[in-house]
Amino acid sequence: MNDNKQESYIYVGPKGQRYATIPPIEINEIPEKLYHYTSYDSVFNIINSKKLWITQINFLNDESEFKYAGDIGRRYLIKLLKSSLGNDEKYVYEKLLENTVFDHSNNCFVFSLSEEKDLLSQWRGYCKDSGVSMGFNYTELLNISNEQQFKIYPCIYSLEDQEKAIKRIIDDITQLYKKNKFDIHNHNFFWQVFNSMFSILAKCIKHPSFKEEKEWRLIGGPFKISDQKCNYRPTKNMLIPYYEFDLSSSETLGLDEFVIGPNKHLHRARESFSLFGHRNKYRWNVKTTEIPFLPE
Image (cartoon, rainbow, N blue to C red; front, side):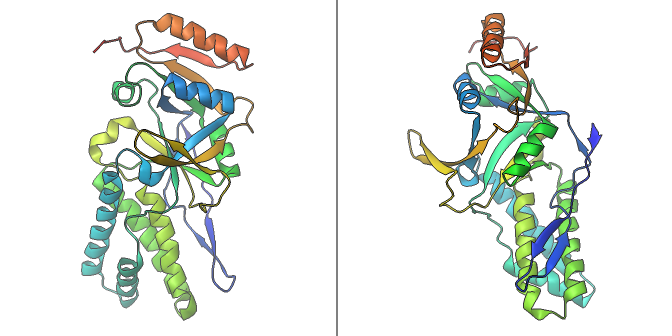
């Protein structure tokens, strides 16, 4: 694990003023690698196209988790408002409660990753018959992400840590307001800044029952619908919006290793995947799962 120094976020106000805020999520330590579990069809297409198709957040499998995050944010602001002592704090909390959008149905795109490379629940959830976990080098992926206005953040699972994270950005906006409260033309802008920060934080708040996943999220947007990298893919029931995330700026596509998931042809699967990598001039480390194959 390495320390990760995060830069301040800069927001430009309506009159061109520049305001620095803390990053919406604090990262204390970073893993060397992050893994994405997927099918052979998907990994084949990713490597050949050198692109990820990152799904728009409202079309991910579990819509309830975003409502969960919004409910926590709203309840915590109400709790702070009831206990606030100073006039400045009370004013800020009231305005944040009044102006914050808690459902976050904006045009953002999310790609799930995990610190765990060989986790049974992930194989079952994303690779029902067989599949692969793709191991991204964190530093490489971070560099690729910065080029495309994406950020990488860890998910937060315990209620205590979630409330601490919310308080952290509320305190930052409160201080921003106190320093600039006589510039009344910018007040609405401050609430918009908090909305933006909470929107990112909310995308990384998850129920404690998912803690074993140790999930991180690659988050981008909001993007305009007219953005050339925003597109649609067909499914049985609907068209799913996605963002075309380019990996080609890295010689290795940001990837270090692969783990072949539970499979009754495990060693042949590893051999063929290694040959596929060599044919494409990649020298990835290809491993096999330690979880036994259990046919359904």
